[in-house]
Picture (spheres, rainbow, N blue to C red):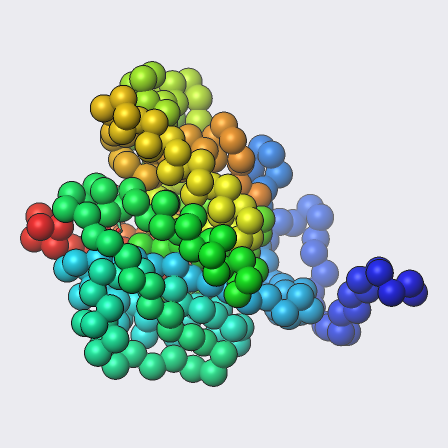
Length: 299
Ligand code: UD2
């Protein structure tokens, strides 16, 4: 074949044939109206996906912020990521922190082809600014270094632990995650920003899903577009003295609705709350938000 054609030859594999009239998951939505897959345990075959992604030698960057008191969550986050996140793939953990001196003493060790990279960034007084400014900081490092070091970025909150497999099935051009508190609720219950003056505004009769601010990602170029857009929207609102109700999460929801719909959507298996126990449609609970004393940890 000509040199410029990228031929992918997959190895012979034995696996059950897909049954067109027998979908593996029948009690959950597996595809969005714009044909983005919704990832649930049972509707993908990880061996096939690993074959596909290994052919491309994918490199993954995980961004996580540990600013001020939130450094307390970092060690367990990394330790559990080492057990469950992208096992077997090269991963750069990009740790954004204002306390590099402290976190480098945490004795965190990572396996082969994994790297801890500490990025020193400023802290902000208000916790709302800390969470919102993540968009700007991710954007800035995207051009500076992520683009040359990794293919995909996965952008996560730090007050979390992994407790089951999270692998290449999540990767796509741009992905969002269903917020565990809203995926069974109606649009009117979504906590979108409802003031038309805000750049994050979504009226009551619009909206696809309510996405979580703490779990998104995609190809580096797409994450650049997303974070750049959200940062600019926040700056415009700031100049007009308005701040969206759920901060970065509100701007992210607006972006996913009007600017770029996710090409893949992660089910709540990928983001669940420690306190919510389990549910019959969850075959796996892969990543959970830890219960925290908001007032204490944010001041
Ligand atoms: C939700 C979202 C979060 C963000 C926020 C906006 C999820 C799971 N979480 O979380 O992503 O959209 O709403 O209101 O979807 N941080 C620090 N130091 C601080 C404060 C925050 O490092 O002093 C970082 C840290 O990585 C933390 C993240 O910012 O995980 C978000 O802050 P949060 O966890 O307090 O926000 P929360 O729980 O309201």
